[in-house]
Image (tube, rainbow, N blue to C red; front, side, top):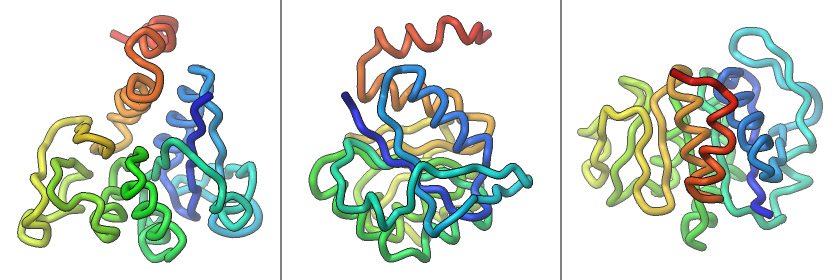
Length: 183
């Protein structure tokens, strides 16, 4: 069974976090949510989430993918956390999947994970002048090898379905997507 780590920072974008967690679990993927610190996580719009554990409790475990929800100031908290930087780099170096949506691709940029890759992010979060080794696209979801990025809350469902397809294949994506009755 695929295992995915979703770190939850104070001020994360709840639509992105919950959509990813929900759809991956519908696909039968083991999703572990981990708060950067103890206790509940208050999201950017006031929704409160209860993580499964803390990042300290799970950071040495093996995961197939790490998914970073965006939102502000959540993405800033992820970017400033040395554990997240280390995990992002080590996952990429091991050839495991790193994924980020909205403002969170800046975390992957800071960790050097986007160097030599194509990526996308919330408009204005990443600047081409600051990332000459990264080709920035305006697509809803961009997959370049083991790195998957997405633009924002409106692309969260497409992002999550792409993660499912990446981990489990197109048949499992379809099995999850069909009952959602998407247009």
